Image (tube, rainbow, N blue to C red; front, side, top):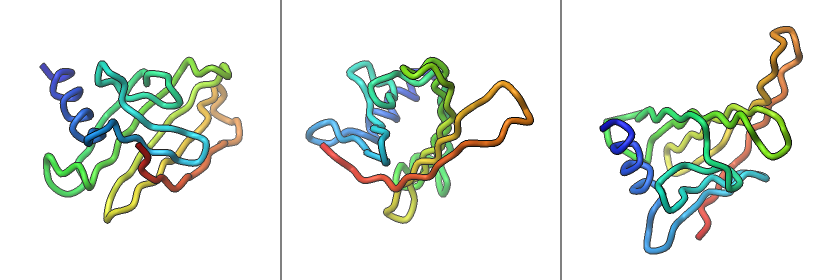
Length: 113
């Protein structure tokens, strides 16, 4: 039931007359035909949606996602935030060693068709 609601929510959030997507730096955040969130064409392993203002307000959301088997062999954590008409994506390289230096970036996002 929860996964079905999540798929419906993501489809509503990213859909328009044609499937809309966000491009954030070198990352493309989209939804595939099954309703799953994809980053550069790869389905995310986990995702969590938090509404920043009121429940069901997709103009003000935060999505936390992970991609553990990316094409380049690395694991990434993502935080997509959309609020006040702006969107951005925080990306962090996830590493096994706790003492390894953090590698992260923040990218402004714009909607594309």
